[in-house]
Image (cartoon, rainbow, N blue to C red):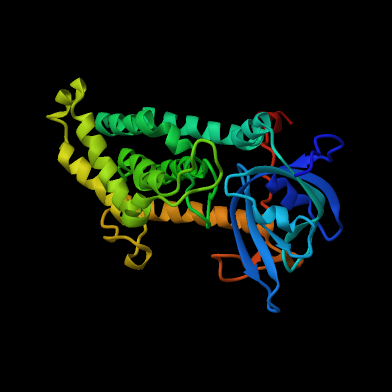
Length: 362
């Protein structure tokens, strides 16, 4: 690889690159990690490479054809390699964003560390989201659910921070599960305010635990943006793993001294555990989406829809950000969305408050 540490153009994240890339080439550099590399053939039998590049907030596929001077070098790139790619970037339409006249060099150890830390804005948002999760947990009234959630954050908080909510469809990035859970908690708290018959504590705790099995299905290593496939996740799935984790934490929780004080609480602890397990088991909402059981309580119904709403809102956000605009305000459909999407209608700002006392004095 070339040593291009001097005279480099502005460096962007992949998200920033998507926002500025257009039909005309523009010089930028990106720091990325190789997530995956595969060799394919064109319709005429010529080889080309597809390389998935990733950073803290996004990923993209780079296609390199055999007439590219970098083809032999890229062909040897190993998964997990950290590189800088400096190029004239443009959105080609057919193949998306592509680097022209690309140059490549390995990142230094310091640059790797900075890349793994994530861009400042994303890191700040995820830190704020994690603090919000801690605040919701500390405000739970049921001491059993508060202890259960606190124990989860205490034992698995670091792994939680580097887990994605999905591999592709929504919040598919390091720390994405924290973003998803925090926003779901805000939504759940709002819904519980509208429907006071809901068990707010149970719903908030269910949000925290609904995807907890993904810590062993969609987690990233400490030093990588390349999400590995993990045997437990492949063989059991996150719902089964979540049920097992909750039962394990529930047993651990009842070994604590304060557990003796809960014996006379109503509802009984065993019923609380059973309802929590039901929230995890039913949150996909339908058998064909992987739920072993359908939602059978108000909290389970609410949790399923809160989960679905936040996932869909994130998909739409990414779609507006990355999809081709077919006509003013109409964007090309994207996976897993099956229709073209339309730009949202801007909200009318609220009218300024009127000072009644001033009107009365006139």
